[in-house]
Image (cartoon, rainbow, N blue to C red; front, side):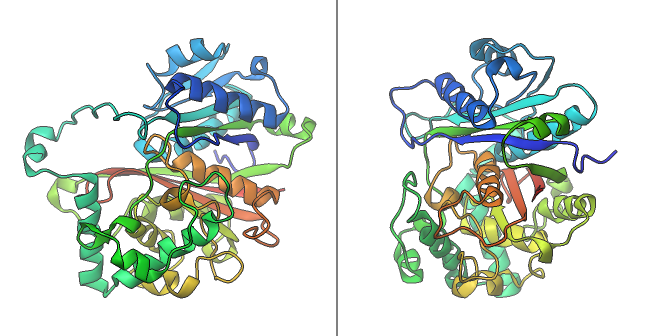
Length: 381
């Protein structure tokens, strides 16, 4: 069974804060839930499905209680930053199967205010922990390998940050609103060779929420009709040590989502791409089919990702590189900006003309190790 056209995004909300020392994580969840429900023109009593990930304090049942919901379907799938795109696909599946008709997805976190809780040790911990892998050095390895194999340069990676900064200047809530140059990126401190500080995403408090509804509900609401036409998920593993650092799970989720949606990369008007680091964007654009493997550097250089001038506008809110990465999990915010673009609600300076098809992609975990991927394709009806 395909989920194409079986569910619509009716409500979205992104918390305006990037620093929330006066709020609990649960309160942030509640505030973004309220915002998305109101944006959809619904009430809390209408929600009959709830989706959350590891950022929800205590998991699904404490959050359902805290939010005062009465639901008949829950999903607490946890795959890091791509959890919320997977939730969107799962919500469409649940709605198509009749398990719920109005689903709420929430994300919230406070890594800027206080340290994130330690991640539970995985089955691999006894074999890998001694080697000191961190998020930064794992992505640094991916960047170095891509440069070695394909001749990708630091200048090309820097153009991704430059594009994000051009967009962030128009977002009043963005954490970093200053436009930067390639030279600014290359002159920023080295974090994990070859990645500089400005190749890395921001750390913010905040959150966001999405309301997904059945077609018959969408037809009754006075909201733009944003249809889910393709969704997929994949886990890339260490493959028994046979790891190729130059590709991500997007190689599989992109192809599957395009096939379900019945469209191709050249049809897409706007992309929201997970941007924990600049190398994350470049590798995923290749794997999703927007450039041949090894030619992503040519795609992203010279402003090609900047709205209004470039070939492929991306992350027009500033993305995780400049605007928001709440809870160190940027997947849900990628869906939010894609919906804004399809609604025509992005800032006029970055709004893509005639935007009727958009793609949102997320990753969770680490490209240099095991990770989850999810791709969603949305259409304005």
